[in-house]
Structures are given as structure tokens and as C-alpha cells.
Image 1 (tube, rainbow, N blue to C red):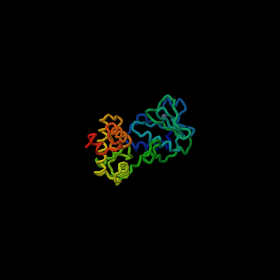
Image 2 (image 1 turned 90 degrees about the vertical axis):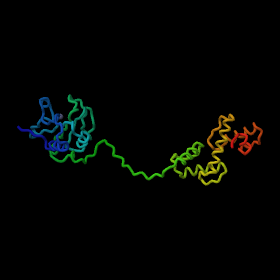
Image 3 (image 1 turned 120 degrees about the vertical axis):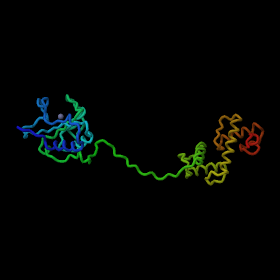
Length: 265
Ligand SMILES: [Zn+2]
């Protein structure tokens, strides 16, 4: 009696061959060898059904195994397949450990269902490239970034100075945006300056003078004095303490006499 490979599997093999011309077929097979024929195997012709062979082995050397497995999982003709110590079958091709003697690391074994419809030829879609990969994430679509305003080093240093004072400036980007303006305004408000939000000469002068006072206080031994250019509570307290020590009117403000005494010009 003659035997034949199920047309569906023949077509699958043809699609794989077409997608990978000249592929390595060393581990290919379909008709049962001696070890197969000794036991029940889909590689053995089913003579009760006209001699159909319902399994093929495909060498994995040159093929896209993941793509093929995705194709197999999508096709109702497939009963199960075995690859790399794993058998995929039963409900929705769940992966289970395959404990047979051949680990199937060189080939993938494909068995179709024992039905006439499973034998029928029909496109698998392996060569078509229309198969959805089973477990690959969709590629993130990269949006074109909006053109960024270019920052300047000057603004970057202003932002850094404001941040050091504890004022909110957001990201140090060198762009004179709403956050920088708000922080400059807060600085100006605290120092009784015109609140225009621009780091102009007057603001810069107050900042520089504050730093000089703070540095002088540090030199006088006020170790808690931070030199950040912001005339805050600590600076005022230290100035008061200094004024008391040196016999000046104690007001906590760095007026001309205090500045002169501190050696700040
Ligand atoms: Zn096999």
C-alpha cells in the first residue's frame, strides 16, 4: 500500500522552502524511520485512512522558528508541535515540557489533527509575512519631537543660582520660561526690588552684594552661613549678631556701616 504526506503539511514545507531557498534540510523528515515505526507516531502512514502521514520535521537551522510557531498556533489544522524540549498543543497551544527521547533542538515536529480537513492544502501564511509574532511587543511609534527653544548658558547659570537659593525653577534648561521668571520675581519680592521677572543689573547687583555679605560672615566665623546670594533669615540673624558684636545699630540689614565693617565694597 502506498503512503503520502498530508497535502497541508506538504504545502507548509513548500512555503518554508520558498521563504528560505537552499535552507539546511539535514533534520527534515516526514516518513517514519525504524524507531518511529516501532511505536505509534504521526510519522507512520495511517493505512486505515489511505496511507496519510500526518507529521513533518523541519530543520530549524535556516528558518524563522518563532515565526513558524506563530503560524502553527494560528492554524486549526495543527494538533501539536514539538520544539526545543517543549510540546505545544492541547488548549491554545500551551507550552509544556516534552520528555521524549529526542529533545527536538535540531528540528521542529509538526503534527496535524486526525481529520480530513486537517489534511487539506491551504495557505499557512509563513512566506506571506502577514503573521503576527506571538510574543513580540509592538514597536513604539516615535513621534517627532517639538522643536525645543534653545537655552543659553547665562540663563542656565541664573537658574542654577535660583535653585541653590531653594527657589523652584524646574529643569535647568537655560530657557527663560515662566518658571524662571516666577523664581526671579520671588527673589525680587524678597529683596524689595521691582518685580519684573527679569534678571537685570539691579537684581544681579543685589545677588552679588548678598553673596559678598554672606562670604564675609562666613569669614567672621558664622559657619552656618550659606553663600547663595539670598538674604534670608540666617543671613539677617548673623548680621544682627555681628552688629551686636562690633557695636553697630542692630537691624539685621547690611547697610553702609555694616558693609564697611565687614569689608564688603
Ligand atoms: Zn518528528
